Image 1 (cartoon, helix red, strand yellow):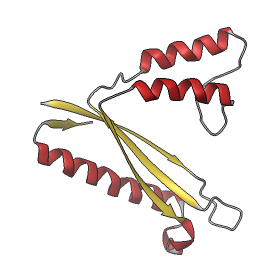
Image 2 (tube, helix red, strand yellow; image 1 turned 90 degrees about the horizontal axis):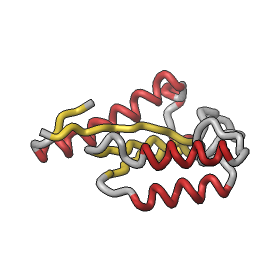
Image 3 (spheres, helix red, strand yellow; image 1 turned 45 degrees about the horizontal axis):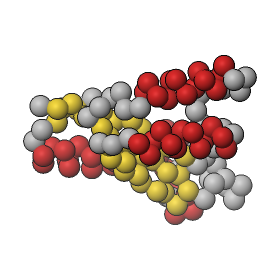
Image 4 (cartoon, helix red, strand yellow; image 1 turned 30 degrees about the vertical axis):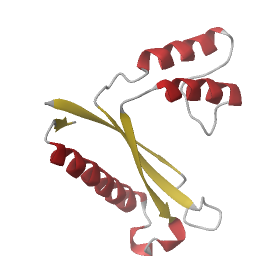
Length: 128
């Protein structure tokens, strides 16, 4: 059996006022290769640092355009992964679940269950 690796991330903020982002996006990248582009990304990060660009981590919303361009070039070459997202329009969220400790686990539970059901049907994957 193949092992399935899940990488979770979200975007948007948890401010439900008019000043907050319009959406929360919960995303899961799934792959059978946990090392997907790791060496290329690691090398790119250290090359940026050597060139004098202060960089602790990659974060698309905060990185300079040159960094984003180089990272997207690496990602475009990747294969054998699937990305699934749930997009939540915040103004439609029930006020009773508008806290981080309620909405975060609820949405990720839906997303991960969907992914696991799909792979369970294939009969060839363990889960991490």
